[in-house]
Image (tube, rainbow, N blue to C red; front, top):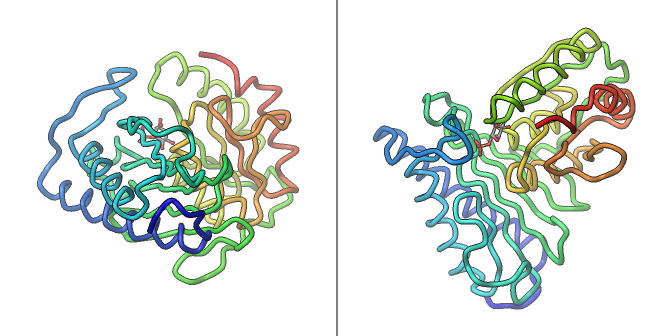
Length: 274
Ligand code: LIP
């Protein structure tokens, strides 16, 4: 494998191989207990030795498979010296353990999320729950799958009957703002689910296990792969006012629910606050 321009199938194959290896490492390290705990943006934004080890291992495997590609990882950023897109315009976007707080508490709900981006567009992605082995994949234009089944997202058309997944940041002031938005939104929906893992939340929306998902404050590695999987299952994945999914807000919803949910979130300044 060299700096040649790869096919999407080839990129997905590499992503799945790396995600399975990373998931096994994360799960094995968790069985030995949690070590090397430190914090990042706030006292509750934790990182563990496993987050770092899984990322180093995944980057090494990606390097071996495609030496010229760029890698953007949560723990080491793009510390590989190569530009946004490597020799062939390929960049890998990796969250080694999405749901680190769940990992810390031993909740069986954390994932490896890996996307391949070519010339700035995500074209392949995998999200793998490291404990259950649940694995969601997608290729742009090729659909989204879980266990060989093509995913079809919710067809709900009434926001009042929509089950909503969402999340909260690590900054107390931001959580207060997010809770305020949620308190105003909850009378207008069926109910809320807070699982703690953006990548899996997007995949649950992709398979219709929840109807919609939204969250403020995500990084690219939290939503790159899950966003493609959600899009390929039929959801609209965007921000407010067509801004695109990003740190201000990520919304994933069936076309019929996107407008009503968007308008509530805009009215409630969900992209605003700290
Ligand atoms: C987490 C996200 C989750 C969000 C958390 C955190 P991490 O990512 O997956 O949706 O609510 O605040 O950002 O920190 O576990 O990689």
